Image (cartoon, rainbow, N blue to C red; front, side, top):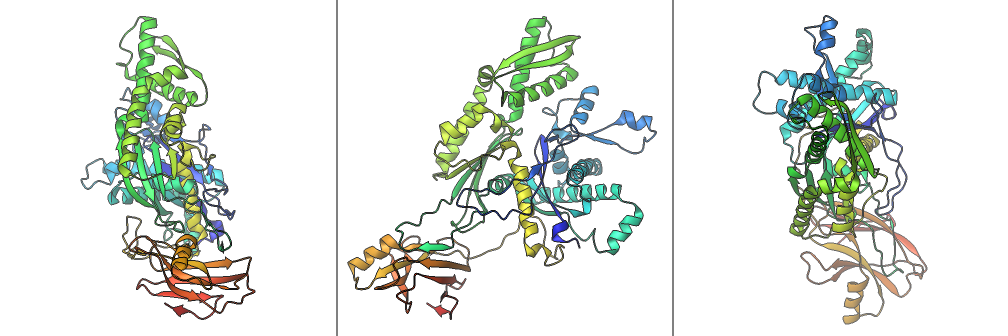
Length: 566
């Protein structure tokens, strides 16, 4: 088995149009404070053309295969090369016929009903992931056997689809491994204990969860010290987050929450999707506008009826939309677009915003309806997807709809957030000793599909309160209502263990520490359920450990001493 330091964490974002690969960083011990995360971000890998994304499209290079005399062997091509091949063969554009997109290949090959083309689809999708593996190996100077991957899946994907993507990625990595080593090297690797028994895909996570991880929301650390001399021990942690994933296939709004400030468990509450607000719809609107302007200026007609011209124009419009995200104007230029006539159509940002105004109104209605239906104040609003790079879309979300919400890390690009989150999650898994407890192997009965485990949730909040000696009745009730500090909160999974360093600059003279069952949840009124006594009057700090079992048994320990059960 490979050592932890030899393994490379990889995150793969398989979008509906683009795929991105990120390499994680295992050395990320920089502390966090609330919502402020300063850990270094993973690196996005560039392809051979220098782009930080690869079009998730697979085609076959029939012309070169026939020249080489390999008619029985299929040579796959990817990205822009596959797109140009579609234009040469005069096939429909990928926006009209997405059957060659990798996500569609995986989805159709993992369906219950199989057809004659299932093996070909699996082979094509595996070839694409083999191509991404080669990019990761070249960028990290690593061997394919040392890659450990986390892959993103859309919200609502079925277990069959998740299993299909895991198997396809595994097959792609194995193909890349077989292409790089000889038979002698393969035997030597197996003899040393590496290879087939170690799965390359460690986990699959949903897109919104990956976005939260990219912004460090699951890695915030609670302070280990509580100062009783301070009236408020506020935390900047979050509870409800809205993830707006606006990509090529549509706009998806997802509400996630966590049970308490000390929990890193993400729970998807609700999600809503509108395909009519997709990035493809924006490209189609710009394509139709450019074709109309070209036909009016050149006095021709039927540009969009030509599949070759439609391919070239759509590719030029995609590039123009990316440029308009950072520049005020752009010129959509295509040489010899139709009947040998060149096209040059200038597009300003205000003109572009007018073209997508209808889509923006639909998106605004969807987000407003979603937020009002949830009836929750979103502490954090995160964005993902290519469309969120556009200033008009970003202003809609940040300025108009959710001006007071935290925006997460400012250095996480929206279009790369999912890949970054997957790579950070892969690095977190490799940093845990539990991954190597069983030699990195999947145990019997364990799989990467959805798993359900029933656990009890804490029905009440338990905290501590400093009470001055002599306070009784009304004074005591007012003290525990106003000064109690929660340690175990409602909804935390049981069992739960909390250790805090309690400090008080004034010492513990003429006062005691009360264990309080705080108001909230099933408790109508706060009350004292125990006291911490025999603390030296001169002591300014002590360590308190509190544990609540699944059976409801509360155990306390002071300074690591004997435990007492309440």
